[in-house]
Length: 540
Image (cartoon, rainbow, N blue to C red):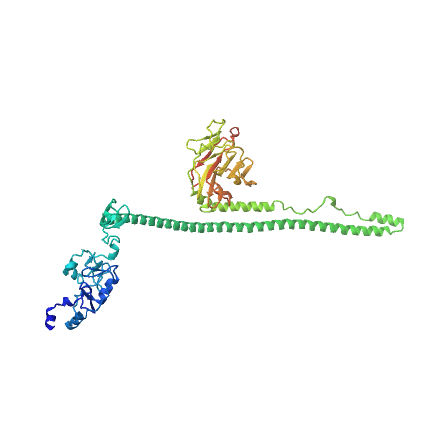
């Protein structure tokens, strides 16, 4: 036995799976020996039970028995076979499926064994005749996932029709008529697509980041506008409060002075009346005393010497009238309004400037213009003509009133435009919704889709139910119209005076709005001047 031991090499006592000295060696029916643990773990990972060396298939999982003879020889041999140390596997590398403990880097993968081997555990495939026939490829992780489930072959092609990975046998059966390409080629195509997709995603990210910045900038500007609005409001309201206090003081002083004057007049008259009463009382006493005189001579002598009655006033025309305060409060309020207007003009930017930034370029739409209206070629001017033109029927056209809309409409956000009304004795300006009635009589109120300002020699009104009468503004030459669609706001401004005229708030807009213009009748030439849509000049 000793001689036999000496003639055997260490390979004869090494497991072909772990390449270490046998531990509890067992034998298969095909005559190959393995460590019990090694072959058991090997079969635990397989669907079919086969020999790790010769690939012989077993119908059922073999019932392994310890090879006592080999076990004794291993014990007698006494020295374990040690594998050469190799560097451990890196994260990006494929590990050896056989190594226990520290896994080593796989150098090849076997398409027959469905396992990857390091240099040491690959040795049986390089030595054993049957294993040499196995197909070895570059290391692949998750090798079982790379195999065709139907043909048990490597998935190395790509079907462009069904967009799935296939093996060579698949191209001869289910995918026979489908165009296929090597995985690497499709990989490069898909990587190019992925690169394009990544570029598109990055562009979308940048667009959204830019949008976020725009929103932040809007919030920043809004905060600056809010701070400025608060400062301007404090300035105006403070001045207004001072003016109110002064008006109140002036009113109190004026009323008190008038009351004091009336009281002084009454006091003087009372004193004068009391003096006359005293004089008349004394006179009455003299008369009574004389009336008691019995002698005729003495009576007549005393009567002759009696003093003449004191002079008295004709009190029938004398009266104390209470002071009149009519117009006092009105004059104070007029003074208050004047102060408010002055303070508004002092504002550095003013409300008008803040809305002028929403200027839109609009032109008049001839398809909506009444047949008597004459529009300029650029669509910026309109006036009332003498004759009614013969025009083709158009459902958009006004047929009763001499109105016109712009080509442009607005369904969200804010917009602003200005109309010159210089030298006009009557005009009608504002906005109207798309569905307004353009034929027959029209009641131009918000309820019917109109938010408009009307002016004639009788005054200026915002047309509503009832109309809102507004104070006349001297030399009104240009009107600004501002709309905040989302907030439901329509505001009108005196552009030259840079002051607010009127605002309709709480409006409900559910469809497009069009700027609305009506130059009114020419009144035999007195109102022949055109209405002109003017560009905004914020330096006015």
